Image (cartoon, rainbow, N blue to C red):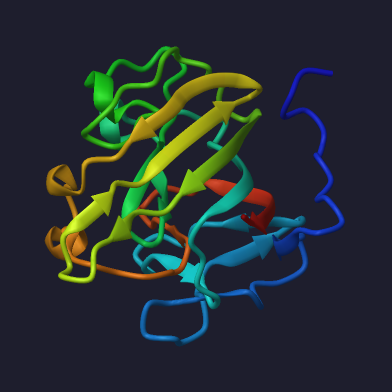
Length: 207
């Protein structure tokens, strides 16, 4: 089967963030319980309930996450099954139904949102599972707070390289304008953009 058709098991040294049972590893930004739902082993965005994030903080990591957009398509562009994975709560890998759906290049699935378009559109048809495999190196800061080295990210979508050791520019982040300021490890955040995107089989290895 093609990548994404079957669950890819977590390595023995990985921390499982979602295994289809509950949201015990997740919360809202204020620490209150995550309000998304679990249906048939999938985590499902509950519209207007807010973003969710891991209870633990992470820096350098290998993150595996599988996502699926609704089979019944509605809307176009950025309104078509939008979500996102935010590394350290700041740096977004876009999630979007880009199967036959045109939008601006650096807003596609697999983009570093509003910065870098994916090398190719590897998105599967609505109702099919997509796999993101992310290798992330956190930024480093000097003692005076200046940026020593920016965040670096590599993303494979469904086994296809879509970001190749891309340097994330903190000055160009759309959200969290203060993100270029010094920061340490922070949660992985998933976005509630009002669409019923589904997630499964989320695991992480700290590097």
